[in-house]
Image (cartoon, rainbow, N blue to C red; front, side, top):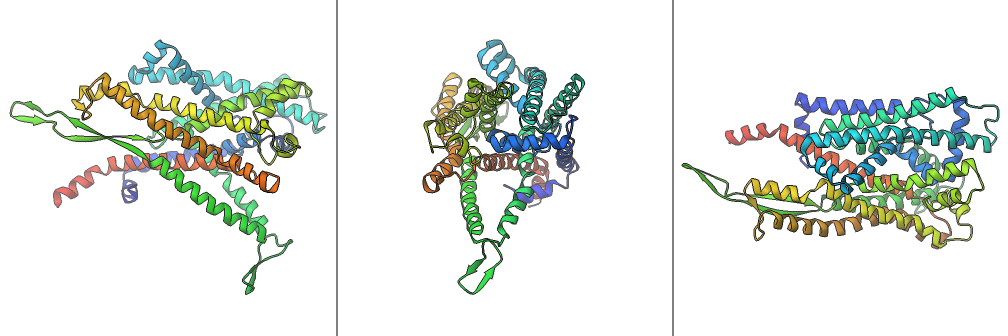
Length: 478
């Protein structure tokens, strides 16, 4: 990364304006997270949300990616889940229907139409999820005898669903505004901001536990006593070391790429000659970035949501209970209730489905963003070729072979990284009899690191483009 170039580019008004716009959008998003849903007594429903989050790891993850919107019962509690689900559906249809695939390859016009259809599909999905959320929360308040005197009217339902749907659509719009600024993917950036926004409360909880000396203090070689809890201190040190190691390997995997040399044929036009130069085509090891993890989580969340709706209507329904148990990630919150007799085969179902979906979506999303046929056609039109490979279809097949090999290793690596929290929990269950509960923080860490690198790379490339004339002038002066 060219950090000096990035700081120099901030002197450019256009670059500074883009950065300030993104920061302003993030501030607006955080303000939206503080606006409550107009639905009865807010404190009553917040208590119901707290109960759900203690029972369901899925609810905790929704709260994480919504920036605390679920816990605070804000209008953005549905978050970007409808838009992500709509994107998955439209992209699957694009691959399945030839006319849609042809439209997607029809330049900017085709992509705009597909994006418009994705937005249109997001609206009914947001409405359905909003109704489901409110219904689950209301049934939770009734089952816990928290709001026996409150019965929402049709007007209350309509107002709450409208507010939550509007919040989800506004988030989608804010994400697209960020993408238009050319500094990273807007949807990923909003999810990144959501996770980062939870750090202050996490750090405060760790600080309270660390400086609680009711169980003793930490003695350093018998020289003096530190006013910290010794157990919590060493746990934090161990987690910090493990986190640094994981971040190191995440950065290495994100930066890894295969370089393919492109030769351009020499052309003679009159007395001038063109071409005869070499260029490179970098192919990233994990070209899909963090999108497969987000897609896999959103895909697995739908059955759990359906199961919660069914169990809210009929608490004894076996189908709903099965959906909730199968599609709920094993965690410290639900381990004691779901696995009272220790680890069973069901414990491995969710991690296995998660790994498979991350693997599949890595291939799927890479095939969308890296169209080998289109790249091969562009190279042929520009007179470019890969040494030892014929232009056209042969080049496309060669690139597909290279990408598939990279995807195999990249998908396995991304899937294993996503599995690290579950592997850690499994080890702690064997050693101590209980999981340590890192499923959410592990997923969050993966998203944060990947999105941060992608956005930093986007900023770096735009900064190089903006300051190119400065470098050119310096070279001429030299």
